[in-house]
Length: 158
Image 1 (tube, rainbow, N blue to C red):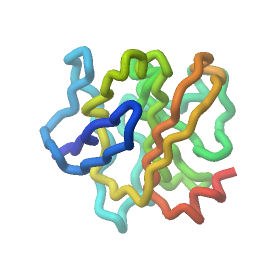
Image 2: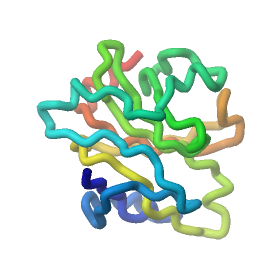
Image 3: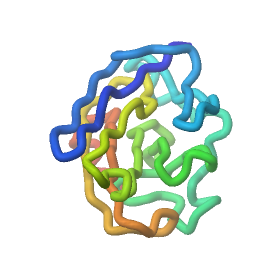
């Protein structure tokens, strides 16, 4: 399976998304451990993508609702928390987004955040949203949301 990576999230500048800038058969985490692969699919198959092996409903491991308004039903690998990736599904079970929750302290010293694993599922648009903290990640952070659905559909995830 070929995995694609995001380019660089430049701190103090723009979010630069470079799909396909590197590829490898397995994703490697920052600690060198192999991680479960994120979904890959052609655009017409997005609705049929279940969470990959090792991903669990986040509401089962942290105090979050089963369906998070604005993001959907979130799945993640417990050992990848708090940053993620989180896979957000709509109420019908369709993959809607891939989200990272990046704590503000990762931005200290104007450092770059590089090589966030991404999927080969097409990305319609990307949002970068500040969050003051919530259950599961109490410290202030940013949500980097790669939407696999059009903005109009994303706005309906309530």
